[in-house]
Length: 127
Image (cartoon, rainbow, N blue to C red; front, side, top):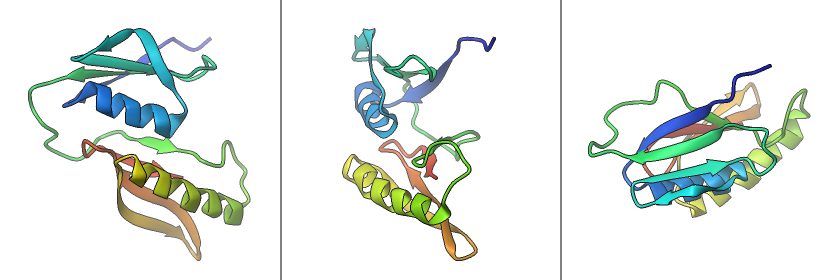
């Protein structure tokens, strides 16, 4: 049996970044963690880990050592053409929510993933 765990994240604006990641991942706000200095989101189906955001005084200063991959095509194996279509569909939605596109990565002639930054500059991939 896996250990129950939460991904803890530093944030400048916990409410804003929690709202972004809730949209990106299909999560919802966790009851009881809705204060100006902290926020938490959870998988509404109870399968994925909670993600907590805590306000910290310092800003982001370097590249993430870990990041989230938003896997738009679900678990593999994938039809890579359909997966690329789903990536291209999801990226503009995340840009509209405050993300920034950094670059596209290709696997030969097929789109592999898009590297992005969330509204606070944390890198993630849409894959």
